[in-house]
Length: 628
Image 1 (cartoon, rainbow, N blue to C red):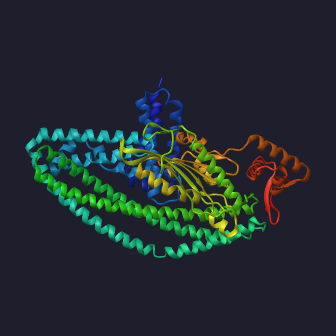
Image 2 (cartoon, rainbow, N blue to C red):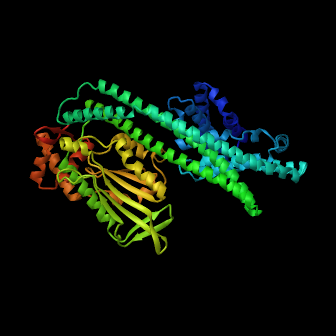
Image 3 (cartoon, one colour):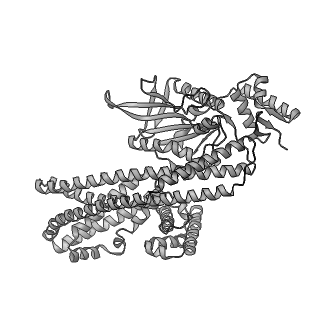
C-alpha cells in the first residue's frame, strides 16, 4: 500500500524549488540553498528506499525526474553566482547549461489556455506566441540527443515541453473560436514581415557584438605568450629538480614552488574563465539564431505547401543569412574551445607535477625508467597489440552502427604506424592505428571510418632527451593532450574510436581515480570515444567498468608476461631479499638470464604488494630492498 500522504510530504520541497524562478533561487543565501539541497537529497533517498519499488513505472520516472531537476536548479544557481564548486560539481557542464531554459515561457505555467487566448487578442501575437514556443522543440531535440545529459533530466524536460505546448495549442483553438480565422490570418501576414525585420536586426547586432568581443579578448590575451614562456621556464626547473631527486638528492624546500604553481594556476584559470564566458555568449547567440531559423523554416514550409513562391524566396534569403552567421559563430566557438583546452592542459600539468614532487618529498617511491627500458616497453606493448589485431578473423562491434564488423585481413591504408622519434636507445611514442572502413555508397565511393582501434605509447620525450631517463608518472595533462584531438575528430566523423594509452612510468593516482569514477564519461569522454590506460611495466590495465564498449577491447591492449618466468623470478628475488635485504636489477637480469622487462615487472609487483621498496641509486641503478 502506497502512503501517498507521506509521498507528497517528501515531494513538497521539490515542488517548492521547481516553483521558484532563477532570481528567487539566486537571492537565497548559501546556507539556505545548501539546506534545501541536503533536505531534497535526503527525501530522494527516502523515496528510493520506500516508494520506488511499488509505484507504476510512469509515476516513478516522473517523480525521480522532479527530484533530479530540482537538484539541478539549485546547482546551476551556485554556478551562476561564480562561487567555489560545491553542489554544482554533481552535474556536468552540459546539464548545468540546460537549467536556465526552464525559465523560458514560465508564463505558460501560470496562465490558463483562456488567459493565453485573451493575451493573443490584446497583443495581436497569436502566431508569434505559437511559433516561438513550437520552435523550442529544436532545443528539446538537441537535449534529447545529447549523450552528456542524464536520462531523468531528459524525461523531466520532455514532460514539461509537452505540457506547455498542449496549452499553447488549446489557446490557439480558443482564439480562433472566439475571434475567427480571418483575424488570425491577418496577424500571420504581418507576423512574417515583422519576423524577417527582427531577424535582420538580430543578425546585425550579433555580428557587431562578435567582432567587439574578439577584439576585447585579443587585448586580454596579449600577455599569454609571456605567461607561456614563464611556464616553460618553470617546467624546466621542475625537470632539473626531478632529475636530482631521481638520482638520490633530497628535494629542497618546495614551498616556493607551491606558491609559483598557485600563481600560474590562477593566471591560467582566469584566462579559461574569460574564454568560457565568450563561449557561453556564442552558445546563447546561437540559440537565438536557432529560434529565428526554426520560426522562418515553419513559414517556408507553409509557403511551399501553398505554392507561394515569392514569399518562400523572401524567407529563404533570410535563412541563408542566418546560416552564414551561425557558421561564423561555430568557427569562433571551435577556436575558443581549442584555446581553452590548451590552457586547461597547461594548468593541470603544472598542478600535477608540483603535487608529485611534494609526494616524493613525503617519501613516496618513484619509478626510474631508462631510455632503453622505455623503448623495450613500447615495443613489447605494440607488438602484443599488433599481433592480436592481426589474429584473423578479428570481430568488432560498434554500438553506434549497431553492427558487428568482421576483419579477415587489413587492406592497404587501414593500418598506419606513426612515431615522433626514431632514436635506437629512446622511446619513439609510436601510435598504431587500425581503421574499420566502409564505402560511402556500398561498393563504391569514398571510405568512411566506422571504428578506429589504436594503441598509443606515451613517453615524456623531453626528459629522455635531456637525461636519458624518466621518473614522472603520466598525469591528467598527458591524458588530456592525447585524447582531446581524438575526441574532436571522432565527433566530427561520428565513428567509434577505441584507444589504449600505455605509459612505462605508470599513471598518476589522480588519473586512475578519474577514469574509474562515475563522472568520468560526463567530464572527459564522448559517446564516440572509449579509453583504457596501460602500465606497460606491470601490465596493469585501468578503465571504467561502466563503459561496456572498452570491456570488449581490453584483450587487445593487455600486455602478456610468461607466468612461469614471472614466478621463477619472483621466487629468486624474494629469496635474495631474505639473505641480502636488497637486489640490484641489472645483477638479477645477468644472473637469472631472463628478459629485463619481466624482472622489472616483478620488482614493481613486489613493491605494490608491500614486500619491498624500489629506489634508484646513482652508479648502481635500480634496486629493490626490504622494508624496514
